[in-house]
Length: 79
Image (cartoon, rainbow, N blue to C red; front, side, top):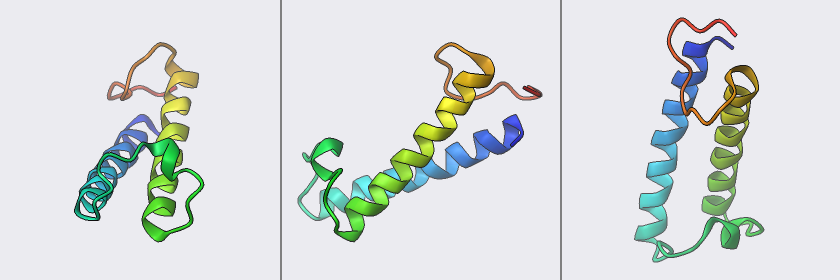
């Protein structure tokens, strides 16, 4: 993936994460920690886990390529 593709994928995952957060709040689960959802099998918990795992993997790839604690790759980065 190019830097732009990673950034675009992270943007999409961020939007999905916000929607999941809204759904959790609407379901009365707004105070629930991610670790509390980790082993649950309902569809909202599963989707939350999938989105979080995908974002973690992309952020790990950024760290692997660029180092440090950045959240997005600079445009034009070819690493």
